[in-house]
Amino acid sequence: MLYDGDRITEISTGRVTDSEFSLVTIPKQMRQQIERHGFDIICISDHLGKIEYVSESVQRVLGFAKQEVMGRSIFRYLMHEDKLFLLRNFDIDRSLEHGEKSFLHLRNHLGRYMIFEAMLYAFYWNGERKVMSLLKDTTDQKQAEEVLIRSEKMSITGQLAAGIAHEIRNPLTSLKGFMQLLQNGISNKEEYYTIMMDEIDKIIAITSELLFLSKPMTNDRNQESINKMLRDVITLLYTEANLYNIDIVLETDEDVLVTCDCSQMKQVFINLIKNAIEEMEEGGLIHIVINRKESGCVISIQDQGPGIPAHLIDKLKEPFFTTKKNGTGLGLMICNQIITNHQGKLEIDSEVGNGSTFHIHLPFEVH
Image (cartoon, rainbow, N blue to C red; front, side, top):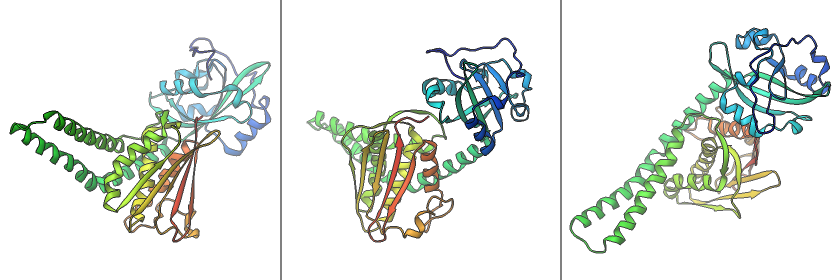
């Protein structure tokens, strides 16, 4: 189910039977994965992507008869972006032992794409390299997640509206004043032009960050700078932090790049920093530290709020559980879900009276 060298090869002709292929011939570890977890479709292909075995369930799930897909390339049914993602990221040698998890979009007989959680394993059979794909339909689950995330985004947007309106009104007032001065023939025009451009840049930065919240749920993962994403989020939340007399300090020694969906990861940062601001009613400092590790990085967001009782920490990631009067109870759950989908983890350290620290562990590469 992959590529030969730097080329993806489409195989659309020829038919093969699966009489010679049996699941008992695959390695024991892979059979155990099937038995333990269960999957909607099991597919085995050669290293170029030609399907050599597919379970009968393909007709129930995708609507294609088994013989209809046998001998064809798996890439005929994959979304184009997923082909490119596998080409860049799937490592056959690495998947020999543990397999690799991914989310793939497969076209059904109606031409619509369904979302599958895929476990990909490479193995050798009769001296040839094969790839087994264990596919579980998660279309409904992913659509439900998208609705929740969009709902939380809209909630955050409404809560930020007052602060953002104030932040935009200030530079607009300055621009209006300078325009009136220029109309009256004031001297030192170049100096005023520079100030006006700075004010316009500030408005653009704020509105650009706000647009990220209105974007639909995607899975567009690229190499992104953690430092830049955090600086952008701090720009967006600067006014609200000022209203609460809070300083936000970002500490890092070097720029750190990770493979992630920029929009989703910014939503995580916005949620966690905004939560910290709302907890610090008497002001203080939010300290954000980026630490580079061997295979990834840790982003730590520390506040000086009242802290969280130990018996509540494990419940914070549960849906609809909140310690805030007007909270939805979805923010931390969605943050945790996004981080988990990026093969990372969210850890919470807190002590009543001494604030809380949220540690986001992210790998450099997502497989």
